Structures are given as structure tokens and as C-alpha cells.
Image (tube, rainbow, N blue to C red; front, side):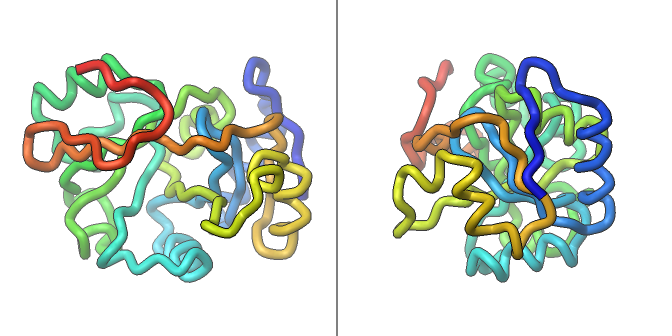
Length: 202
């Protein structure tokens, strides 16, 4: 299903429709403040495993990332010291992924690596989905290394490729081509490990 949603005026009925799919272990493609991404209920292990298999991700070797609604949710799923929290507060919502140590609230699949990426995108569509779901959403870019630029930014072309793989593709307008900036905060000293969109304020 291709579902049109607007960042500045999300339709609650459509949000509920997507949330029902996520609650039932479904996979959804959605816009963020960077590239289009594919995700599921982050606490549904079977759905997480399905996305990892689809993307060829080994959870023991790759960082898994989750989207939270705001900073108040983050301490449930990751360990955050005062300095890191202040940096996150200055930069979120925004195009950043902060790598943090996990807590016991996340399923075992995340703990194989002992770290998790945290995102709070500056995009109302995905944040409303997280808020209404009540759980974070596992997130990974739809982009593969061999993807052409037009395909990863155009939701209709994304739908053509993924309509038989995911349950819903959300059309939130054209996406960006630049990924999030990834900041490793696991040692207490923030380190940018991937330059992407946005300028980090320390």
C-alpha cells in the first residue's frame, strides 16, 4: 500500500492504520529528515530479524538504530551520561544518529553488539508513528550502494521496488540523498564516525 501523509498535518486515521501494521509485526517505509528508511516495531524480534535478513545485516556486527519520539524515551533503551544528554538535547530532533550503550530494556538481538543507534528525526510523520505505537521503531536506510539517486528519493519508485516486500510505503514527499551524521558516544567523548547531514553542536 502507498499511503500519502503530510509532514505538517498528519492524518490521525492514517497514522492509526500504519501503527496497526507495526503492532502486528509489519514492515513500513517512511520519510525522515534525511533519506527514506525501512522499519518495524523495535521490540518485535521477529520483525527486526526480518529486516536484518532483508538488508543483509548481522546484528552482532552492525549497529542497529532505533527512532525515539523525544529525549524522554532514550534513557529506557540506552545509557546516557549528562554530557551526552546535553549534546543530544542541543541537536535533536535533527539528522543525527547517536551510538550509545544499550540497556536491558532492548531485546537480546540488540545486546549482541552492546550498542544501539538513537535517532530523533526532525520529521513529524515518523515521530507521530513512534508516539502512537508507544515503542521505538527500528530504522535502516532503504538505500543500497548500487541504488540510483532518483529511486531513493522518489516514494513512488520506492513503492515499485518494495510493494511486495513491505506492508506500507509512506509517501511524505521527495526524500533527501544525504544520510544522518553518526556520532559515537560510547566512550563518553563524542566522535563523528560518519559525516552526513547536519552540523553537530557540542
